[in-house]
Length: 227
Image (cartoon, rainbow, N blue to C red):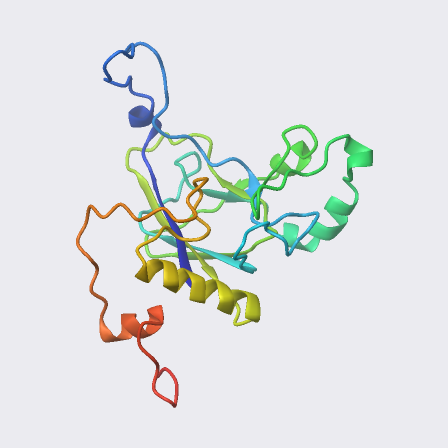
């Protein structure tokens, strides 16, 4: 299991407030945040190829919910439940020859196409979840967070994933640990040209517990394994 990223989505009433920046008109609307476009977490035309130097296989995605998100249009998780059962047949029938435009693959992130995939996008439903909930879903499930956030509190979640113990993921984990110890950004960081970019050290170094050090791979487990 690993932590992918943290999401902190503020309400639209805050996100769309005029920015008070020198040289920028306060009347000009520029959103502080936006929704995450409908997408899947794999390339439908090449399921196991991310184009990364250190790829990982993450078939089960996970969201740990930190704040209540029970109502639609409050920045929460939306998905097309059960789509993994039709994933292969759907994308097999939407080749470039049929639509004129193949699915877009940006590593293991594939945004849905607003025209070609509009029938799938229309099936998106809000997934209500209270604080403390965990949402698990197949990487082939189309998902997003809601286009609008009309609520009055931020939406806070932690995106995680489960990495099966296979050679590809073991190599990935070793590289992630190497970069952590060298204080470099993770190998799969979203920003471009960050191959050897150092972490912005504006915070104190985290001290792991004995269990945390084992989970991070800093210390070995006993011979009988984790208890």
